[in-house]
Length: 410
Image (tube, rainbow, N blue to C red; front, side, top):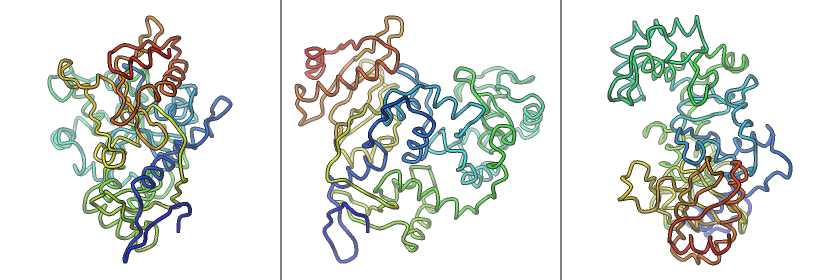
């Protein structure tokens, strides 16, 4: 049985308190480990991926692109080139694919997604627009694949017959649509990026040879391993949480979870306040208390499933990027701020690169938090982020009590 958890026994299962569940989740995510005292390197990045399993990619760049933030939350001041080299450099250890949305995933996990690639070729489990385009345009898609084979690495815009961007579907050209179908089907992958633009190539020219030659596990076996990874990353999770981590099907997840319970890889538990049963991941550990703080990306794996975030932390979180400005409650690009075992505040941040300032557009303390008490540690984290981003100053705007407390201590 996992050590360090004080549980109440029931007839059929163990019971965890809500606080134990929070500490399990935070610890499993690697957010309680001491930050390196020296400049983080590849071994530190691997440690982060061992905890989180994958990192979601997002293009919004109002602060910095989201996929850089989870590593900062866990390692502190690290060179962004560390992640870039791992993802798109010649000694890559990560690859891009649809894990939890578009994601950076350790290359050794690529065989675990081949069942998803094969299903995509049959039009299963992909966006409806991608599926429809694949059904109707296979001759063109085959021509695009031949061109990638001949000319790769290549962007969709560099195709000889890319076509013009069209309305709808993000204004994608036919070449971009064909590339997306091939990417989902695993017939091409990202070799590198130019700025944020993908350059595609054949997997055998982009991924390590050992990965390409690795045997393909059966679908059931691969799904079981993905659920093990998800369970380790979350510490304790419902079946729905486990399904969401790698966006698996309802029926498949239910079957795989039952199999893993049968083999002892997952332990059913009850969590006080949760309507649905939870499952403990392999080697789950929770300290009696946690001491940590971190500014979290909106797409950090601790908070990306909003229902779980509210259930776990009592924190209702909605990203308001697509909300009209006059209707926003908290701001455009709001980061939750983790303090020990709770989410204590949320801050709307923007990098003002022209003036070299990290702008705190708004700062809101959560209910029950005292602005004067949390302003100091929050300001320290904001200054650390500003230094990491190469910004010389934290400038606090807004009129909420926490923003005022931050200005008083700045």
